[in-house]
Amino acid sequence: MDPGAVERDERYEFRIDGEVFHVEIEGGRVAVRDGKAAAEPALVVTTDPVTFVEIGAGRLDPLEATLTRRLSMEGDDGAVLRCSRLLGLLP
Image (cartoon, rainbow, N blue to C red; front, top):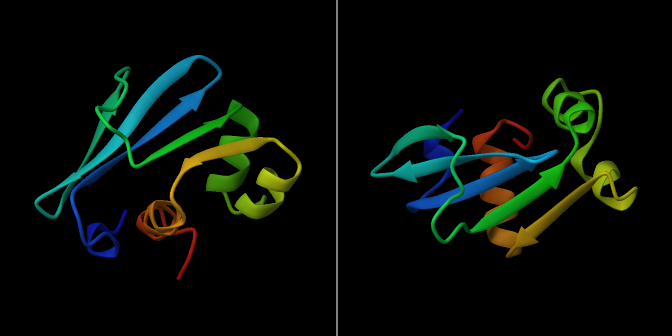
């Protein structure tokens, strides 16, 4: 994760088949909070475990996953881009 990819404090929540965790950026530091929903997330990502792993491994493009309804993202476009950069999915 590259905290420099996010120029503001915010949170990204991930919902994977009923499991919840979030990534929190605060003061240039990144923390993962397992089992906790985020307070006021800038982005909420919902998917299944297989899709989550395939995206993380670079075997599935997030856009393709979204278009095939295997992945849904709720948040503004800027948050999607910042989160994608933080996770190394975009240059």
